[in-house]
Image (cartoon, rainbow, N blue to C red; front, side, top):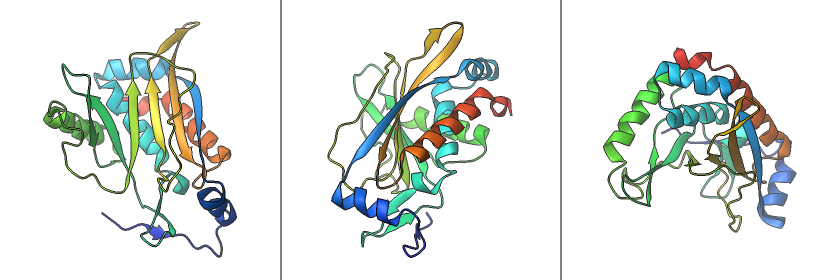
Length: 217
């Protein structure tokens, strides 16, 4: 896979923010929202597609629009941006209370990604291993689903380190006032992105799911 491109620290507007939140005050934050997926649910059913894999593509599509969500650190600790990042997503092992972490190369063609992801799930979900595909590429970000319950807040508690990729968690749909709502949490390292950037990510995902004409192709 292509190497990440170094960020020019002399011209980068967030260079001070990056240094502050990576070293002086290392921290992450989480934003939890409800996303209206009424039209999305109808479109996925009509197309006969798999909901979770379609959600993963939509998230990956928006994540790949923005440098701040494709950030990494080089071996020298310098900030850099991957040209593309690939979703790594969890799938429960059948008949077990454990899961596999799978990854699929991101493809801007939704149908091609969906079919490739379905093949990966079919090949590896029943392996019983956490990483049945072996070592995953460095240029990945994490998506997981908790379809057994909805939530109004979700935070992954960990000591902030150098993991700059976002972590996205989905919950069970909620029906309210004739609408279908999806709980969605985004965990972000503050060195990589501020609230403005995460809010933009969420709003772009809302817009993408509100007009799911792309599902039918």
